[in-house]
Image (cartoon, rainbow, N blue to C red; front, top):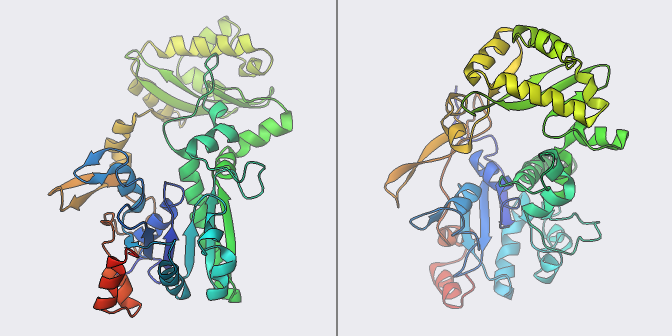
Length: 403
């Protein structure tokens, strides 16, 4: 039986957040039924409302990161605006902000202030470098997280300068880790009656994203083998790599040490590699040139047939292989579509359905509900009325540019 309410339908979040890492945690919670009140600047709103690809007044950046939330405009530089924020916090479970360090204290929504108003509040703060970093007082974006964490090397190509990528992996990993950290702190608050401050950063999240590859580099004090991931040890090497087929279409494979020889035989590559003294994958650990020779020979062999041919052989041998998609190809891939990782939502302003991210979760009883992002100040009257403000008081707040 499917229930109508989402898994987080009892949660109430107030967020003074912008950009991506600061908003996606709460967008995900809104997907799962939480009430998320997004605080925006009167008359201006989130500076990213027009970012990305514009369809009418809808920007792909803002829409992706703020769907399903409620918009309340508040002048937080004013005493009345701060008073309203504090009233909201009294009954909130979670408060989130990603302002530059020092701003929250200046505008009276720092943890110390809000925890006095609501001792059970879970206070999430996202920064670029982390609270204890030497550069912790500086602003930063996804590029900072990618650049400082080592992500650039992980996806580098030998002989080409390191660079950050177009996908916001630091922002998104930070958002997901913040999401999980918030829920952990919330569970603890339910047990103890006491909230706490949770701090995450773009740098820390991207660093965590490197996982065991970073641990291997630290333990060995050597950089990883890039271009292709040849891992394991000299005696038991494995490989994860991408190769182009006869039409220059890329595909990926990953072979464990136990599967390397079996796969090469299934592909009819074994004798060729053995003849050229390249069948020992562990040689890649001994010399850069041997690694290059092995990869170049594999690239040459794979360029003789279409990728579906190679993928079929590997899969029939119970090996791991799949297509490498472009972003547009991914959005139309049946493995993406059938799992509802991409879906369509009706946009009244555009009078049509638009493709958007679906949900990465499958709940058997409380499925996620995908909505659209709010207009600036769309929920002012609703939220303030629930706080006990009369229509006249709301009108006055608007005239005084408090909302």
